[in-house]
Amino acid sequence: MGEFDLIRRFFTRPATRAVLGVGDDCALLQPAAGMQLAISTDMLVEGRHFLSTVDPFKLGHKALAVNLSDLAACGARPLAFTLALALPRADEAWLEPFSRGLLALADAHGCELVGGDTTQGPLNICITVFGEVPRGQALLRSGARAGDDLYVSGTLGDARLALEVFRGTLSAPAEVFEQARARMEQPTPRVALGQALRGVATAAVDISDGLLGDLGHILQASGVGARVDTSVAMNLIASNNRATWTSAAFSSEKWLELVLSGGDDYELAFTAPASARAAVQVASVQAQTRVTRIGCIEAETGLHLVDAQGQAMPHRYASFDHFA
Ligand code: ADP
Ligand code: MG
Image (tube, rainbow, N blue to C red; front, side):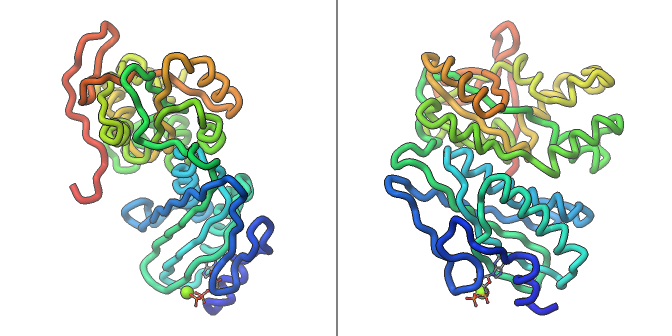
């Protein structure tokens, strides 16, 4: 199978919403009147972002999911994406499930594959997504204000739990591991929630490198600080609440570490004024995505963790940094 056969077989489908899809030198998109394009790129490198043994169907899902998560954080609606793929060899047994996983998630979000590049080399998957957002309404990292509430969507820390089980640094019952593993391998981008939060949230970010690190981006861009209630945050990890397993499995510090600095969850962290609490609930119901208020934004810069009694807790949780 040559390069062009490969592209035709696995990555070419008739364009539906795009003006021109795969096959020419450029794809063509027609932005709707009054809309801005939201664009984001994410790369997945074997050994860095995924294990060589991962199911290619799930890898296809994840490669697009992490990109859709960036659109979600901006409140954008997905339109289209391009796929730059380096492959060691043209292996149909890998390409078939990979493209199925990728395109199933694409279809679920009406996000069309419109082009890309294919080359031989160490396995590397780079996707660029294009979305649209009404002019001036994109959610940014810079809009948080002192007094805002701080929220996160879904659950946090389960993907990291799975990674630690894979690495052998933690152990968990098979049922707990399987559910945590699904969070790591097939994250759910919060696309509907991001759009529902337009005009409600003041700032948002998607959590890829851990809550505290990614929240730090909002704080820095907005010039504010935050207080996080650890007694609430600790319950965000789904694995801690399984009936078959109790929080006694690890120390409470370990649970907290998974939630606060575990990466790969692809949930949204966002801020909204206290006057918007009802509107946040409406967005949550509309998007069928749970949100939890975990703290607030403060004028004083820095990130402060407090316990159930509101007492300051020392911490040295770090987030993931490729070059640290
Ligand atoms: P060019 O020579 O202009 O770079 P290519 O020969 O690399 O174009 O690609 C031919 C067509 O196939 C282009 O429309 C390109 O966007 C598309 N394409 C290449 N690789 C992929 C891929 N992995 N997924 C989707 N489309 C692809
Ligand atoms: Mg090319």
